[in-house]
Image (cartoon, rainbow, N blue to C red):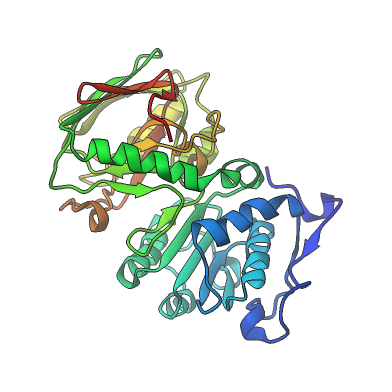
Length: 366
């Protein structure tokens, strides 16, 4: 939970080091807010390690009222680097939930080399986020996607050693790119196999963001669009999109799903509301029930699922997503208007015949 600014005993103001001209400060008519200095290590990691922002690069920062304090910590680090930026607070531009990405933000993205999206997701806003990533993809902007970033994530996942995570990710992605299949099991009952399609690319989003692929922060995963997934997944971690905030950590009330020929065929949970909401979400359009992403989390600095999809999908293990396959990156030739991740715990993973994870621990050195 993000603590209110008024409750922080020691705060840092991003005005301390900001230059006087409005282009540099980038807050427009707003006064730069104070922020908890505990956010500084994660913010510095984002700007200096993950995005490697240079003084000559223009940065588009998109945030909202709830996430303003975290955005201020990140902007403080941009001031330290000396890069020009503009901060957009969504509530200043349009009513929430957004139906479309505000034109002012689109125009700023068109002239930026780096972008940061630190916002709390609201229901039915996926369309506006896809409009944003369409610009990011076309212009090859180094983009940090920080949907639902909060205090806990800033103090945990954003303090990871992303260079170490990148070394592990590189080793795992090299293995899976040569493989025919990946099998995953858990003691809770997961047993699924992904047959891989070598026409689809594997992506490494380790937290070190490049122009070729924007990345979630905190980072730490490799993913592809699978050829075909079959089997059972016991979701005792978390489900994504707006259902994440609604249902949180699923350790005590898991959702069990079954897949056949890459389609969701069954979903069951003692929590009937979760079961019904998930089923409805995954039947929004003709491909909402189709497995669009097969991924392996590689952020070895994460110790457990916390009930926040932004961080939890990087937790070591397998996660999959139904819907949009990110075809612009993977090469998948189909689409969907939805995308929802599902995460479990303590996996055993085999790449072809080689076991790479046992009970949630990698057997491959970083």
